[in-house]
Length: 229
Image 1 (cartoon, rainbow, N blue to C red):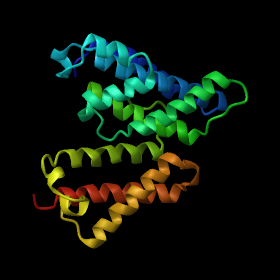
Image 2 (image 1 turned 180 degrees about the vertical axis):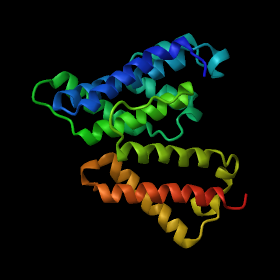
Image 3 (image 1 turned 45 degrees about the vertical axis):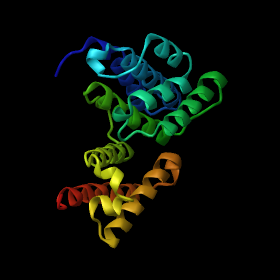
């Protein structure tokens, strides 16, 4: 693995946020959320600012970069416009949502808390983004959480979708794309609904349900891989 110097800053910030998360206090959950969000912002700024010979991005001029880095929404929009292929497994709307939570923590300060599950979910998104942009996994320090595991496997499913290439645009839905039976389509629908609930209402998820859906998603991915091309 190459030791590209430009990724050291975002990686250090992300690891620092994960270290806070592993300490499991209200203060560390707040700090973890803030630092992880800072790392996400730095990842995107760093990637968009790299030379074209490295990123292969077309059209990111100095003017566009300067405008993008003026605000978080502009940064998100520029990533969506120029680096969409690096956002597999990432929902930019969710990053914006977590960024707003971070702003509340940062600006309102005392008395504001953040649920552990939300920090875990955002850390998983940050880890996926870092791997997509810089080709390297950043492992969480301390405990491994089921939410983290599910979202990483979900990213693998999204990569499987992207790998279908032009077929994505000629098919109406996942059932056609992967040649799914009615039962298999129903399983995927249940997994997708669970994934949305996990990101937006993680406090409603039980450990048993989480374990079940992680296994279901792993099995579904293996099933799809074995389907005729």
